[in-house]
Length: 354
Ligand code: GAL
Ligand code: CA
Image 1 (cartoon, protein in one colour):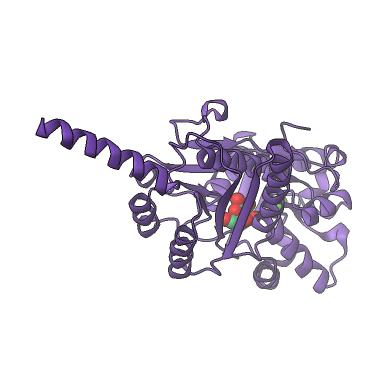
Image 2 (cartoon, protein in one colour):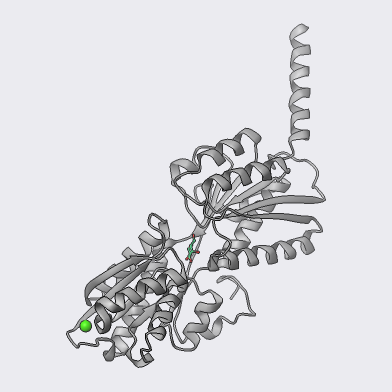
């Protein structure tokens, strides 16, 4: 008898807990009228990330229209500080966000955030800056949305190969060797490491002999890339035949340096980038950039939104086709002068929707 009472009490407690937490997103019976999603980005001035966020807001608007459920989004800028980002996550949890989306500042330091999330039973969608799998495995309600990094490197390499094959003048000194330099994103970022490696190996696999003149880390940043490129130009000048940039902003920084030096476009090395941001696409359109690789910000934003929505409303994740139950990785697309016309600014469609 006593035991029965105990049991009934325990069940009641569990039920009450489920009603009042509201944050787990896993057990609501009734659909809420509104949901609250928190987002923190590593740097709001990063061109790609800020465009990804614009898409995220757009998809949220569409989803609201579709479902009649208000989606409130809080966005914070961590301004390159992991400590700041940790406090932001704490605030978002205290504010009652059902899900938090985290663009980690330091992808090796997700522990504080994971512990807070688990303690408060709030799912986390990490995006764009990938943590290691062991960290993602630390708790059930952790996810990652990003892209297939190696694919972007392969495609960037292919763009360079095409230029080499179709434009013999790309071999400026006529020695049959493609002299290249690399503008790298942040040291230790998954995309920087993998993109460089695959871009170069793709060129080599096509039987083209290459020579690395040098590399510089420019942290995805246009102004830093311009400075680094100016230094490279002083050191190697005309010898540079190819600039492999880990993203469009750095490719554009290289172009800024060439222009600032007063070097005519016919003398420029081949320059390739990754992202297909508005400015990147414009540079392909006007022939300054040989090509770029589309980093599907719409596809990633849509996946994040859908996942956040389902987690907040206790919906099913079945249609999201999560890899290992945790990952969503969107493919890239190659954009040379021929493909760029399919990428009008006004379109804003994911690769799949195009
Ligand atoms: C990459 C993107 C870069 C930069 C970086 C930030 O995927 O290509 O431009 O935004 O993410 O983590
Ligand atoms: Ca050469």
